[in-house]
Length: 283
Image: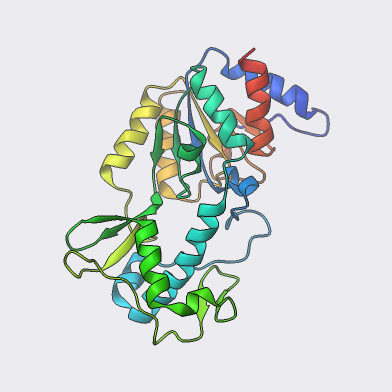
């Protein structure tokens, strides 16, 4: 199956939206979202065009390297504040309307920012976890991120001094006093804490992937929005939709690994696209 790019110099945005609405009308649609859906909320897309080369923390390094773990917690703390301050954008809100209208059966998100849930979507599978929780790798105890953030700031006054903590271009943190940085441990068993997100080198939890796959299996169409599909879990869900012969739509600025398996590739922003679908499908 070859994707048909329906936004070209000869096909305007309005005509493209009309064609997309005609394809999805009457179909219960599962939506798989990536970082591009949250860029309008001020959260950067680390894989999009022009993004800096980023070397993410792997699970193996987090477990084994004390200094790397300190740098991660410093950077993650600052990132948490950015995520917490971000607000759902027009794309998130439009998906809520489409879900309430029965047109979207559920959202599978690769994002860890929690913005779909905060916007009001009721059926969200956070495939890669959520930054608002922290878990103990020893006893499994879960903690709210706010409580861990308070401990971090109390133990590390450096976090309150922006001149002492800077974010490097790869998203890591540079902390002047890295040796003195105190990483929080589990208040129940003293074990190692980790934000409840899937690191590189970790597998998506089986229950999460099962829930995501169930959404695709019960849908009449799949829309992939704002994702380059560079992560294997997204490709597996796309392949499940392809085997079921579902219409697959990819909405993304730039190429994705799923373009060749999509019926339609829409070169457009996700916020304006979902808002345009609300106008056309919920009259």
